[in-house]
Image (cartoon, rainbow, N blue to C red; front, side, top):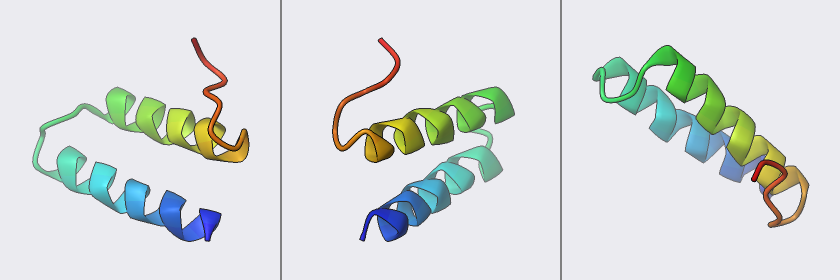
Length: 47
């Protein structure tokens, strides 16, 4: 279940990147933050 959520989020972020709504750096940070968030079971690692 967790993995498919990460994949869904990644796909959405890729769409934003493709349409130049976010930069590559923002994309990388979103994926990192979301992966950290998911892996910590709902607690953000980064403040």
